[in-house]
Length: 128
Image: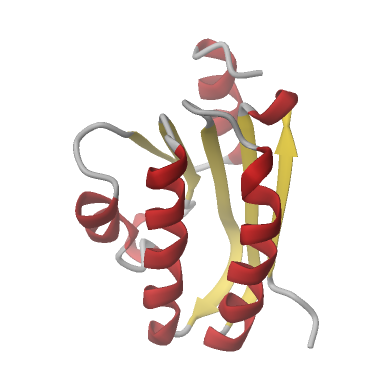
């Protein structure tokens, strides 16, 4: 099975890029959590996440518990901000609600419509 989830650490651990694409299934997310746990030790406290969902065709509802686990792991590692790329706000897939529950008020969340907009936000924040 080709992964539909990718993780990449940049900027000496200050930026975690995530990319979701195609049809994302619970099985993809199970593999994604394993891959995520492998890269997570490389991030440093206060890191930012850029979550690019611009190429997602669909996502199974059963992916939610896996997203929740990733969010909990990020919170435990001291995530400072999350920037999401979701071109169509109606396809949010519940991430805003999950963020409230799993990140709390201490993590800045920004949703952008394009990757270019997200990159500008990272630059303005001094992350890249």
